[in-house]
Length: 299
Ligand code: C5P
Image 1 (cartoon, rainbow, N blue to C red):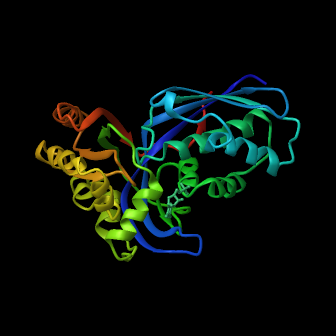
Image 2: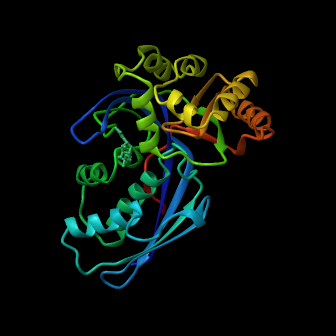
Image 3: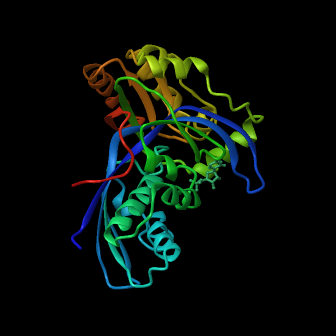
């Protein structure tokens, strides 16, 4: 079999409502995911049976573990085990563009891409539902990166319902100098706040259906934002700067620290990028559009 190449998106949470915790300490969520074009690419190639190798290049490559603790290796091993394939191995190359520890589900995206890539490489006959179950075992965000598009997530964020969204939304993303650990942000949320109700704003769903970027911008909400800002106070300034530069909406993406700014057009997203790039609290800016499909084999 020749190598399999898979492209996978990142995600932005347009709404992230956080409720109380379950028995395992996971928070009940009500979220709206949008898959965006800032994505990673995974190349999976044959390796001798029982060998699982991983190499990164690109964004944050030097800092990422390449052993069994990496979710990408866990994904490959879980797939092999669940389908009783002791005869397989894989050599994985991951080209990273999604910021590491950035709140855009980069690690989860790579795991989703590995599930799709290894399914093809090993000739496994798994349907999307079986892959979704494996994805949910790997992490709460992994199923959405398989699905892509725009979806409501409930439960831990892994119970997905696709929703209607019209048109294309343009984003400018401000990356931070240091990452934030998702568990640490949820702990800070627990310290600062009472659990919220997890209802998703109806105005957001209507705005998405209508493709009304200004109304989407006005109804973005993230209950984790206060916790992320408490751990990285400079994010408050980043959000202010983007709004002052005319963003239709500004939000910390997921558990942060990446800040996402909604633009009215591609040209507008360039202007926002220029305005944000000069702030010393911003390491780099990226532009992206959404919604885009989930993890897909490239022909
Ligand atoms: O599922 P995943 O491993 O991506 O989650 C990372 C961490 O984020 C969890 O260990 C937990 O601390 C926190 N989390 C949470 N509630 C969720 C999703 C994640 O508390 N619904």
